[in-house]
Amino acid sequence: MALLSCVQCQKLPGLFGNTLIHFKSGLVVKKIKQNDNVLFFYNDSKKWLMRVSNKQQFHTHIGIIDHKKVIGKQYGNAIKTNKGKIIYLLEPTIYDFVMKSQRSTQIVYPKDLGYIAARIGLQSGQQIIEIGTGSGSLTTFLASIVKPKGHVYTYDVDENFMAIARKNIEKAGLVKHVTMEKFDIKNARKVPRTNADVVVVDLGDPWLVVPQARKMLKGSGAFVSICPTMNQLEKLVTALRQNDFFDIECTEQIVRTIEAREGKTRHSFRGIGHTTYVAFARKVTTPKELRRIVTTDSEDIDSDGSKLVEDESLSSQKK
Image 1: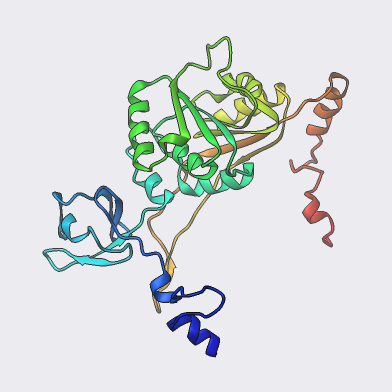
Image 2: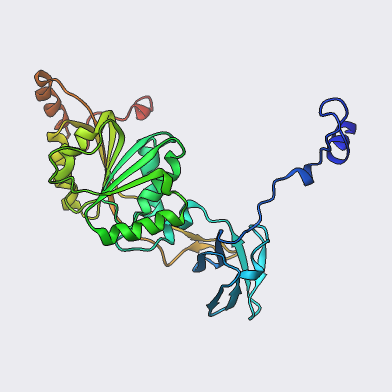
C-alpha cells in the first residue's frame, strides 16, 4: 500500500529518478480543437456529426448548438442549448462516419460490415480492391481496418458518385489509405492490380466481373459481393463455380434492437429490416482432372436440400 501511495501521489524513488508519477495527471486528455469532428448526441434519433468551427452555430428544434462552447472541452462532456437541452460531445467512431455519410447510393450497413470483416479475416496490412465505390461507406470501413500499412484501391465509372465518396472518405480522415480511380473493369483488357487479399464487388451485375476478380486475387484470396436480390445471388454463384471459387456462402444479417427500460423492456418497433445479401467465396485452383469430382461433391445433398457434409464443429456432438 505504501508503494501504491507513492506511485499515485509523489515521486517514486529509484525506478524513475525524480519523475513525478501521478495516475490522474498522467492521463492523456484529448480536447476538442478547431476543425475536429464531433458527434453531437441528444438521443438515438437526434444526433449530428459535424466539424467544429468557432464561427459556426447549428440551429435545431432543440435549440442552438454553439460551436464556440465546444472547442477546448473534452470528448464526453456535455453542453446546453439555448432551450436548455443537454447535448453530449462524442468522439465519432467508424460506425458514426458510415451511418452519417452522404449517400448517393444505398450504403452497406454496419450489421453487414461486421460479418464481412469477420468472414474474410479483414486485418491491418491487407491490400483490398473494391469494384463499385458507390457512396464510399464500405470503402471507409475497409480502410479503417487495413490501415496503416494496408490500402484500399476502389474503382467506379460514375464521377458524381466518386465525388460524394471522396468527401465521405476525407471526412473520416482516411484519404491516404484509399486510392480512387475512374475505371471500367467490366470492359478492360487488363486488370489494374493483382495479388490482392480481398476483392469486394458492389455492382448490380457482379457475375460479369468474376473472371476479372479472379485475376486480381492471390491464391486463397477472398471474394465478397453485395447483392440486394436473390436473383443476383443465383447468377453470381453460378459464375463463381464456373471460375473455380470455393467456400461459397450467401448470407443475410438481421439485427433486432431492444428498448431496455426498467419494468418495460421490449423489442424496438422500428428497426433495419432487409438491406442486402452478401456472398462470399475463396479463390482456389482445381486441377482439370479433379474438377469433375468437385462438381459431383458440390451437388451431394439429401432429400430435404441440406448438405450431407456437416460442419466439423458439430461432428463431435451427440445426435
